[in-house]
Image (cartoon, rainbow, N blue to C red; front, side, top):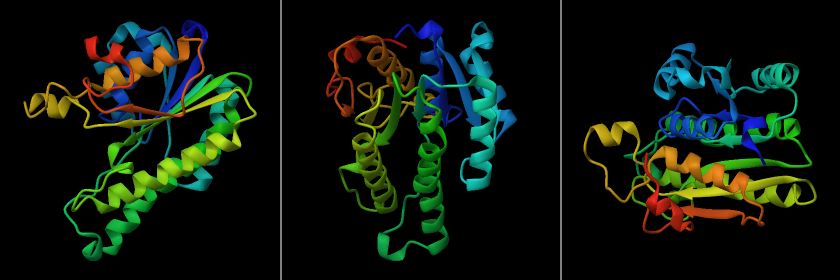
Length: 245
């Protein structure tokens, strides 16, 4: 796939991981549509990725957490851009500090909406817009999908459910040309982590997660479904260990 001729959507592209993914995709020559609830966050993203990519960076304002709004967003993107060549889902929300048995219901409700409903509506809305002959879906998930930590139960539960949803989707799309990727990541060295000087040098930058997606879309050999991008020293791709940002 020649990315300079391709266009795709990043849901969660203004987040701490998403901004790096968007930057890497733009650097590859791809056109990127970013969905965000806030025009202000889009402007912050534009400042971060620099003006040289302005022509390739498009934005849509909307809230994917509601079915009616998701339908409006889907219709708008289809009308403006037509078929998509790739879809990146890198949304996420954290609820920490509660044992499962004492989690307030309003916090549980927020977890279900942010960490499950939004991902379901992303799939429901945008999978029909993907080129069914040759396109890519990348779902960025946490290592908590496969590991439990005290007081991180809600996040682990939703991460495991997201993984199950993507694996099921991959089976349902088996006879299409949509290539599905479940990316299990370790702790990511976002700008907040890096500025606070609390980051481990072995952690990956968000741009490296995006660069991995670029690499997968530009190679010809068959891909695996689950990819572990836990750190530079524990990555499925040795090339990640030498990537700079």
